Image (cartoon, rainbow over all chains, first blue to last red; front, side, top):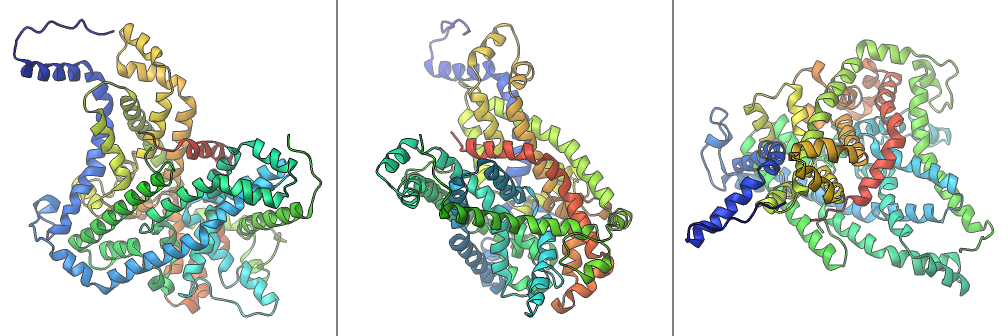
Length: 319
Length: 291
């Protein structure tokens, strides 16, 4: 139902346009009230913190607060980029994530292909349940399990000593930290990651397999000539999206798996931000500068990844 | 139709590989549960045991007596009771509002939501703002910080888009306002998406710990995950020398107690898992963001 279009009384068209605009707003006033609660939250807990990043260009004084502290220009960034620990954290973040990307990325794909080829459908359901379960646990729970399995008296070391080998100090070794992070992440999330590829596989047209079988193609040939090429777009998009996350370093995981012995190997950017903000110096301007740097790099990577995914014919982040 | 084939060597390899993978996941869980039911002595003597010879509940009793697990449970329940209604209210109202069409300003408002997915201020300014609002040290800081997720809102909005517009139109003709339409027409039709979103927020609250660690002060306010963290991770952090790792970690909490704490934190997720699996997978599939 539309209100009867009122015949314009005054002749000034400009005022009239503005009038219709406000009439539109007034007409939908109920709809705006729907948006208000969400908008209040967004302003308070998303946009005010974004504005709070202006601390990066200020000298924070506790008594003046975020908004009252004096501006100092790029001074904080000069300190940030001169801090060797910061440079180190950036490189460590990149190193861990690139290694993760190379080693970890194929696992969900292989798992999806294996699950897809498994003939026993009952068993397949059981397998899928087992593989996805760890995804729903927090990294604190998983860290408890990992510490148990890898500790001095844990499963792996007990098995090693049983075979006469020396026990390995998994949790306390800087060298083993990154491998441990990768293995535990595969353990926790490969099953979950496989879901998206399984969906892509289930979308493949069955006719392709039928005609391949008539032509006498083996299962391996079907796997490499039909299944893989068909899910290649999904693989590409997932890969590009992982590139978009190169600077967000899995804080949740690393923070719960690190300990005093491995803290140097584990100090990725987010751990560094946590340390300088809440543990050592508590210089909020300095940590805001680091946060701003991190957020901007993250945003740039995400936007580039999104463009690239679209360019490759995928859906990207925003369709 | 795909013709039936015989069980080949390839099937055998696939079966073995998948079974090994599944065992790599199941054995650590089994080990955790069994250690939680065994005595300290038995754990020290036979860490590779498959089943404890004298199962005991001692670890659980001690854990609830001195581990603070009970308070942790209570605090997490409080967070769920406060957080779920708030999150659902914020998410549904905004999702329904943004699924309406033809009003000025819709696009910029939607962009405001989307932008939070690619850029955020991080923990430092959020902490200062919580402090300004006098919320640090109160459970509300944790509730509010996790109160809204753009991803969940968009999932819900996409669902609302699929509902027939004629329903709302006829309600409007009957003089119903938008809030009334939302609560008496839309929500009764949206049980699947409400269930999905409730589970999403629920798991996030259950597994959350970072906000609590930053915003809360007192140990007796900490939610379950933080209690578990203090039992497991921090008792390990304190042993600065890696060599003495096991010697001193065992002092306050035995391995049995630690594993009991892990198990206790895991149980609700296990109970809800069939539901979770169903709804989360659906969320991943429909999660592509349409603008």
